[in-house]
Image (cartoon, rainbow, N blue to C red; front, side):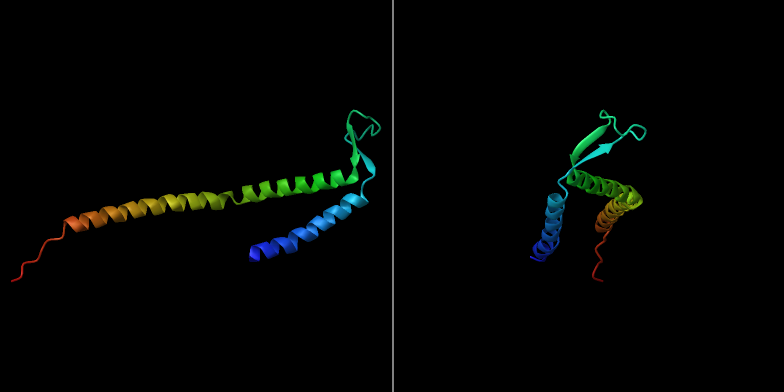
Length: 110
């Protein structure tokens, strides 16, 4: 329930801002990839400005996600190593339990 409320409180304002940006920035803009001859139509793209805004946001999200994933690699590696050690120690404890169960000698009642 709380997750739903948080989603509504976050996603609805973001959607409103995106719709307002889309409506306000409908004019065509040319993005030139040739810095020496910007009028060259081979290396240029013409689209509404909001398309470029959305692409920039998406590109930023993707780059940020990859950067976060790469910087957290050492923690994932450590978790894998510790998980394998935990499995090893668990199996060692099970072996010792089995050995202890076999080694129990009944005590005579004298």
